[in-house]
Length: 218
Image (cartoon, rainbow, N blue to C red; front, top):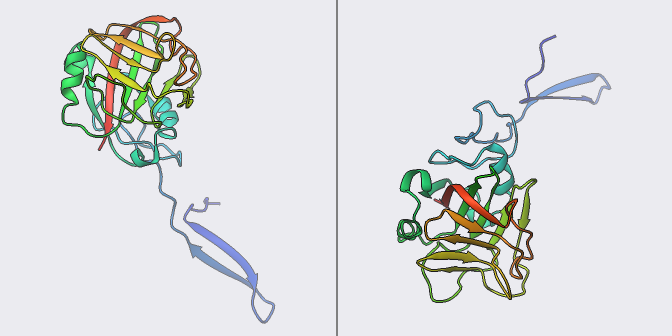
């Protein structure tokens, strides 16, 4: 017997003369996941993956599936555009800031370290040099090392992001930072901090960056 199409539904009921009656109803199929550059074209998952406008050296389908459900609602449904990549733009924090000069939307930082661990941060504001901390409670840290975890704002303080010419830091409060990167985007560190009550994002507190990308939503 030929299998029934998903778009056909058969309803059985009796009419006024108690005779069996069959009605074939055509139903619209639910929207399938739009394939991203990191997913196969024949994906049958009903979850909607974001569309990546650029190739990622780091993100795969598993990463996208987890992250897309955690970013704020105001950024969901938009295409992801690569703003900065160490593979494309070199390893320079100054260049990262320069690439974000015209951006006024949230950004997602993705890091792969020398241990092949993936982690990073979502910032409600684009990264920039500042004399004070900036950002909102939408900002969070996350890690896939070893399983996916997200660390949202604890409410303890508002030390979300602060940018210097020689480093960028996220989270703090009486000790080390939740995420810290040097001017060359080569050395970094991650410790538990009051802002996010996170565990270290990387396998080791101090790590070496292999690849780093920053995405925004357009």
